[in-house]
Image (cartoon, rainbow, N blue to C red; front, side):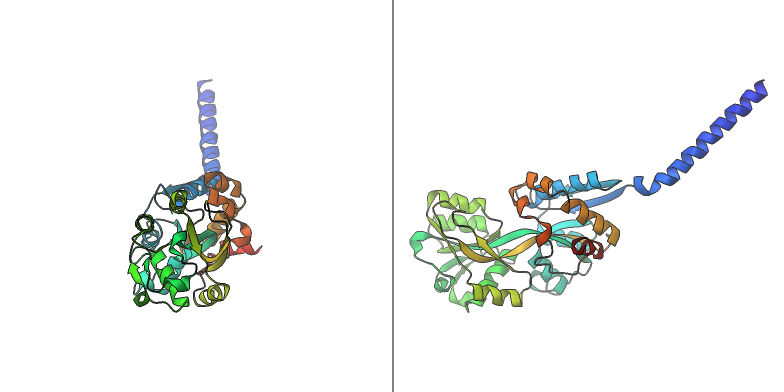
Length: 320
């Protein structure tokens, strides 16, 4: 009797062990944890909430996924983190990414070749802002004026320089002020500059702030100049800022934008690239809930301004 019980216990125990091993074997593919770090931007900006929503989508939609978004110093810092493989995914501006993969501007002689595109997200619009009382109505009229072009070596400053160049204006033709937009906005309100430049999604809170106390004007980028810029710098796209975007300014403004985009290191394989693109672009409502720019993220514009080679899996998803 005892012998039979012992045998039975051993048999049951062995079956349990074998079953557990088999189950573990079957489940290892889906339950194997996949860790992805997403680099975003400052907590007060746009990249951070969008990246956080992306992490939530990936965790919900991809089995075994453990994605997390982290606050960073935005595009240039993110590209350096991708280069060092300290993050897997990042939200970046497509123009700065173009400079990185081509080794130009702030990445001169520091070419980065391990980045692949996942998708373009939403436009970050180039905006020349002046006060209505300045009487300035076109970019041509900035010659001889005090212009805040962005912090030295920033992506915005490169945008300002390229747009002015399309109008035949160099920094020798203006009184150039290397001010971040926060500094430029203050200088504009105080009458210390005639125009200030920024690259950001509209409506931009700092411009809304100026418009709440002063009548502002945005300077258009003419269609022929926009086309010349796009031909030379493939990361630009045409944009129209709707009339009434800023209080007291009821004209629509043709201009150009760069795109915020999601990129990955080349360590993210094609299957994962496909799964990431599919998860995000079939759950866009969650990005819309995270930030107002979410409504500008669409599958139709996911390849616009793509300024680098894509992850083949993500490309396959968008071309299906």
